[in-house]
Length: 450
Ligand SMILES: [Zn+2]
Image (cartoon, rainbow, N blue to C red; front, side):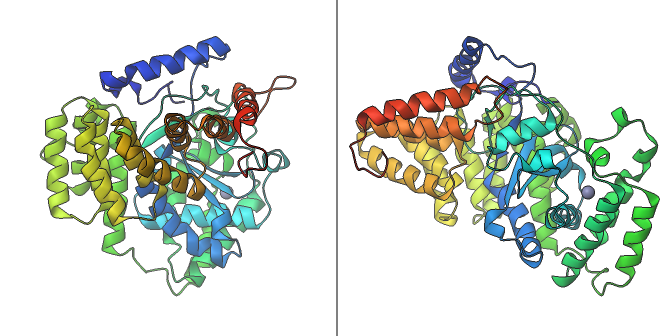
């Protein structure tokens, strides 16, 4: 299970007050958890996963826009579907899967569970609950109250103190039916199902292990020789079995893995796994992140500048550079890379929130309106960006819009709420209610916000 503030050992000192303040808040509320769960927001990873998932959702008859994909920062291998059409991947699973085809296989399999209606009733009951609350209930991890604001690849902690494993294993027949559905989906979009088979082989040894030693992914999706055999037979009939992932997707996969590794693993481990002699793209990115997290900003900047020189049109390199500068207090310098990222990818609310946050942090009155508008647009497009609500509240407050500031804060708490213990509403829900009540005092009658 992840430690509290998984990223905190690497936080530059500038950010510590915010973290301490958050920890203090948690202590006051009396729900200091033994461990905290975090969802990771990263535009690059999300875009990649969504590009794999969209055609699969569509062919399965699901509306891709109503399906959400979430990244859980967790060192256990797991993927699950919960609360309706939400798919969760742990970072460890994404690091374990070697090819885009394997990820597509897992997505297709999970979609098979959604389309087949295999969701346990307890999980269906979570419909309409916040993603973080769902993840915390499913994983049985206590969650801190809303944490320090983050940028770029940031953690979003929050939610509930509810613990309890609501996550049930699928039956053998459900597993087989999800596999067959997955193979059909992949076939109809001209993709190979070989990746799914590879994933099964990867985990097949574990069926003999005790439950505690199995990866959670295997516990919930039991692998058996029968299952492998049935998928084998199904793939024999596929015209696309031999189809390989295109080289650009394989590179995107390595970029994603390098970044995830750099962010979620201890920096010393990253440096051991990816020594300077390793010139692969994955190693370069992992090192870049590790250098900056351990405070070697100059080395990190050298690496990222080299990557940018190689691929000047990659918005995520500029985003990473912006984050590195911002988090080291070089706010003004972070504006240019963050702007470049937005220019290259204007449809990404996450990238726009980074830029708006940097502009807002400069406290330049001329930048208040542009950052406020950027944040309003971003939150309309993606209301799940916790840091965006936080920044928007700051912007409204500075603009003298107290009611809107309270409303934005209420949204932020509400998004992380859910999973109330019997007779005791979650701290975040309580705070959301307080802020919403406060907003009502200021918002004019008849206004849409009211
Ligand atoms: Zn399954």
